[in-house]
Image (cartoon, rainbow, N blue to C red; front, side, top):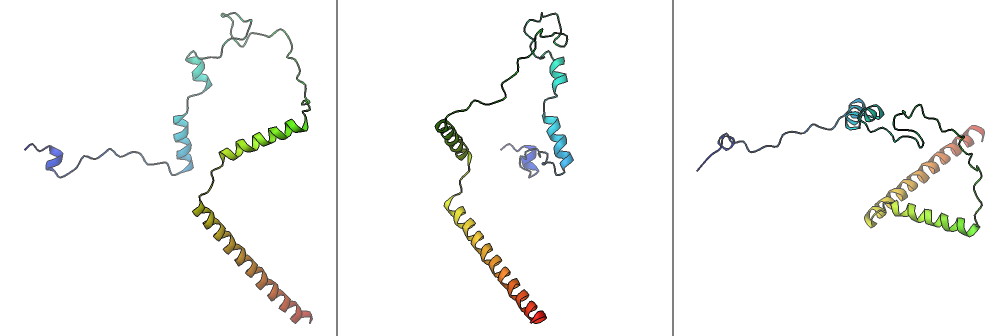
Length: 143
């Protein structure tokens, strides 16, 4: 029987420990920053700059190229659509938003409803007791 060093010492194969999640906000920011791409400056240095503007020769840099004409102004007013089209758009958008909702299970719904009812009963009792105490106090003071 062949016994390895780790078996002989009684230790089992252990996986290397991973770094724990950062606890402080500063550590989280630092971790996020190290995971992000370096940014625009390194992208340009790496030769991944934006494509040249139309009409510019490949020898000119994108900063020195001018368009030669003014940008056309957009019409600020939206075109009026029919009420039926607006209603259909609204329904489509509502339906799309409802698909994103994470719906609770029946058990969660019963739990949430119970918590709300108990809280409401507590608040009603609290307001009733405060009202009763203030009423007695006012009648004692002015009564």
